[in-house]
Length: 271
DNA sequence: CTGAGCACCTGAGGGC
DNA sequence: TGCCCTCAGGTGCTCA
Image (cartoon, rainbow, N blue to C red; front, side, top):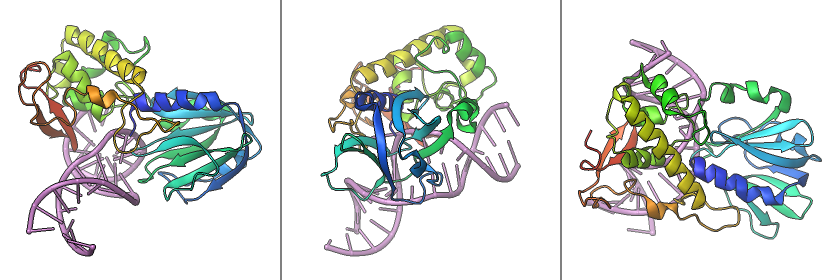
């Protein structure tokens, strides 16, 4: 997926098209992660704003319903002219009063699209247990150190736990730990307060730079205007196994943690 | 509560 | 060209 920078880039890319009235909705798949029920009921209402919480996009509408959406691993929104041919994985099409279409495309269908009454949104099970937003003052060395204190799991695995901090996925977990000089295998509860200070700073910096660069584009992420982000050109370790570290030249190492690939520099991240 | 492992699903790429 | 295997940006669920 798209990690937080890609989700935020998507949000910012869609905002200029709002407000937009929904004239028709075509649902072309029975389900994504959850059944696609009730989406058609948005017909006639207007998308008024898009907010983001964690990697969820919250499409506010004029009908007191918020469309809660997640891009999963391969989801993508695009606003396209109706003359553009539909693709196989274009699962939900919103026909807008501008003549354009907001299309949700997701080959693996791990994404989410749920209409939720806006008054119930903040107590929704998918949102209620989320940890702090990484780019706000809710995410500090103090909160991180505290949430790690009973966690024997490796710091890289803990960083990807949405109860610790939201929005840090597999790429930016490795990249943030590289910047912080912390080895991903360190037990989370062994990080000092000073290391938490460094790590919080590096997570914020990495995510902010990625957003500024327009996100990274691997296989399935494209901007809503079809242009590609270029943060992937700045990866220090992700996907660079056996290649020389940009800082010291030592070959980058790859290992598996919680069934996900982790990359690090053994020299720059000594422990 | 934590941690380990599986589940969902398609497509791309490598080896033979 | 085809087949089989591995891997991929997420995260909710079950079970110990």
